[in-house]
Length: 107
Image (cartoon, rainbow, N blue to C red; front, side):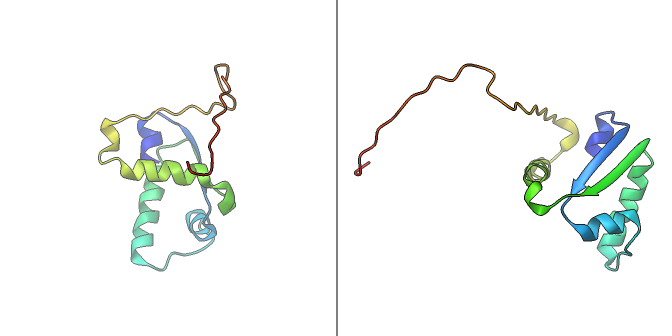
């Protein structure tokens, strides 16, 4: 949420594969652990910085991209000084040169 805000986003649709987290953020479930209560307070504060914010649950198997991005973000020591730009390319942008490599059993 911080990274989206820092990038100037006004509308944020975020995804989680955790039903518990999604329902706690929406207020349907109450957080019991103190650490989660503190996270939810931060989320509530950050939500005010957006015109629209939604956290949507997705199936765990559909969360590969989000998991990769969260791991990448966690790996950055200081996300404010680094910028990661990603672009999804659904197909190769240059012609593919097909090359066949033959390996025998000893390779």
